[in-house]
Every structure is written in C-alpha cells, then in structure tokens.
Length: 143
Image (cartoon, rainbow, N blue to C red):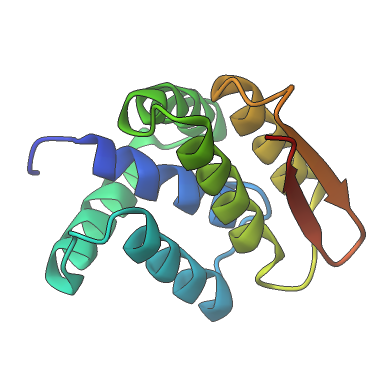
C-alpha cells in the first residue's frame, strides 16, 4: 500500500459515514464521495482518487471490526484538522459528510452521530448548526 496521507483520511471519513453508519454503500453515496473529494482536493486526478479509494477500502476491511474502524475515523478526523486549517474549509468537510449521509435520502442515527463527532473533532461545534429531518441533513455556517 502507498503511504497513508491526509487525502486517504478524507476518503476514509467519507467511506465511514457512507458505510459504517448503516452497513451499506449505495451508488448515490459512491458518487457523492467521488464528487466531494474532487471539490475538496481538486488536484487529485480520477486515477489517483480510485487508487486512494481502493487503499482506503483495503484498510477498512483489514481493520476488521466496528471498534477499530471507528477509532480510525477519529484519527482521520484529527488529521483533517491539519489538511483543512480554516473554518471555511472545515465547514466544507462537515457539509460534504452531511451530503454523503443524505445521498440515499435517509439520515441514519449512526450517520448523524458520526457527523456530530466530525463537528466536534474539527472544532466546529460553535460554528455550525446541524438541521436534521428524517430524509435530509443541512449544515449551516454560523461564520
């Protein structure tokens, strides 16, 4: 496996919200992940993205259980604080996690908990509001 980078951490966070929360990844969530990585990391080519995604999925599988995967989610969120040092960029990360969570038109309680964890880990608790309904989740920036 190539060296793990903060780019891997971003994809890992997206994979976790997509899969770990409800145990499945549907095509709309996959498309949301790819699109959001391209927005957050425009310098990443499609080939680089697919390589990173494959490495992240391998690591996700190798971790073997929810506890280990959740611990890596926390580690990845901490790493994203360095990759995205501004409130505006961190807001985009939270917003993109919410976008992935609602891609399948249902907000699972685990997805909500993971997004709340991201808000806390990225030091955005006082800077964003999460507005949830059964089928959607919006993130408002308090700026």
